[in-house]
Amino acid sequence: MKKEELIQKAYEIAVERYAAVGVDTEKVLKTMQDFHLSLHCWQADDVAGFEVQAGSLTGGIQATGNYPGKARNIDELRADILKAASYIPGTHRLNLHEIYGDFQGKVVDRDQVEPEHFKSWIEWGKEHNMKLDFNSTSFSHPKSGDLSLSNPDEGIRQFWIEHTKRCRAVAEEMGKAQGDPCIMNLWVHDGSKDITVNRMKYRALLKDSLDQIFATEYKNMRDCIESKVFGIGLESYTVGSNDFYIGYGASRNKMITLDTGHFHPTESVADKVSSLLLYVPELMLHVSRPVRWDSDHVTIMDDPTMELFSEIVRCGALDRVHYGLDYFDASINRIGAYVIGSRAAQKCMTRALLEPIAKLREYEANGQGFQRLALLEEEKALPWNAVWDMFCLKNNVPVGEDFIAEIEKYEAEVTSKR
Image (cartoon, rainbow, N blue to C red; front, side, top):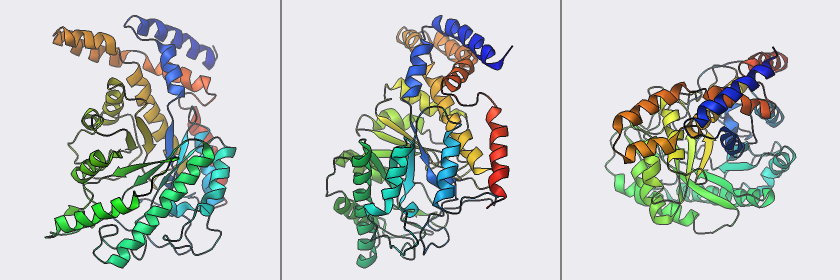
């Protein structure tokens, strides 16, 4: 029997199994088509970017490993992204950092960046049906140091304010060109390696910087702000903490970014979803896998990621959450890392959508704790993978492990040339 026939048979059984607990698998497949990931460009080249004056990574960021085949220029990076996307079902977006501009070999400092430096990206996105999101870049620059938007040196602070203002203008042009808002994420590494006695001072400066940056209103871009617990070399104090950005976001009606690696290891990012959505309009996710610290391992189908996507569905927040990936593993094939992480996130969403939530809520409302827990356990063994396989089949991407050999073949072709 052909593999496609096996997939179809398994799906038919899954349809009946899920119908028995009140779940419509066809509705789930349709919803999955509207689930768009924002693929992070920096996985393909270890966060190097294309600045002529680029230096080594700073700001507490590390890309560990030296696997062959890293993208060395804009053409190779684009080719790798398209190759990865060909194994990921559905249509997706691309998330760019400012340092990935098409600078044409010219020195363009970050307070001089213009929309023209991303014109070729906008055209490329249109050609490949891939809408763009954006990020300002405060790290890996001579003026980064430990403080950027919270720097008491007014010259340095204004440099980064101007940089971020210009990034918002770039995002506005991206959104206008693609007919869909470009989401621009603002994260700065600012902090201190050891004890500081000026916590309030730096946070007041950051607050003022953000107010200056957000003073201009745009129609075609959306702002989101991202916190972090700490960065390497900045372990004792982070200016843009979770509390800071929740306060700022709630008071300014800004989207909050939840990066799964930016919290204490025992914190549940899933638990934050329902709380934040009561006070802020939308959420952005940066999904990675922290191992002991914000190590940006490739996303997998682990319990925290499953819980996060389940909570989004349970909150009825599919139209209020945006989904980005954020890891940069240089120890394995980078395209393979894209595909594993993206498909893992999609699998988590598939399972979350297949949860028999109506029956579970009925049990909960009736105080039937045993029945609720029993069904939560039993639904883990329902044939969700048959629905996932059908989703892949309908989108003409490899089902199961078939993509492994194809990526190996592509790897052999490109590593001999790079």
